[in-house]
Image (cartoon, rainbow, N blue to C red):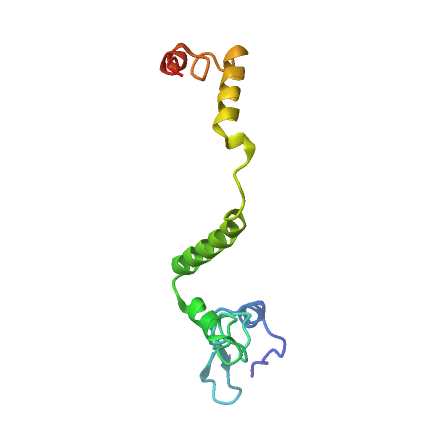
Length: 137
């Protein structure tokens, strides 16, 4: 009669420690038939809780608009967020005057200064083309 080992083999240890679907077999002592043991992973994948929802938003305790946003396509949510934050950033600028550097007098003085000091003489304000185009001013 053959003695059955009580310690698990290396293959059995690997099968039980990893989360993959595997079938392990054991011999029954008296009859010699093989028995299949099936491992079923958690329903939402490994390392997930059975008492929480799959994506972290539980519909019972969350506002309706957050639940709707979590189910919407990602591009729509991101577009709406960018639009909202752009509007919020523009609100403080509605009542203020433009800075003095945007006035036509300041820009004309800046152009004259740049020409006098020959700034960017090849393609910029001091080039022959720019001087010819701005000769009427």
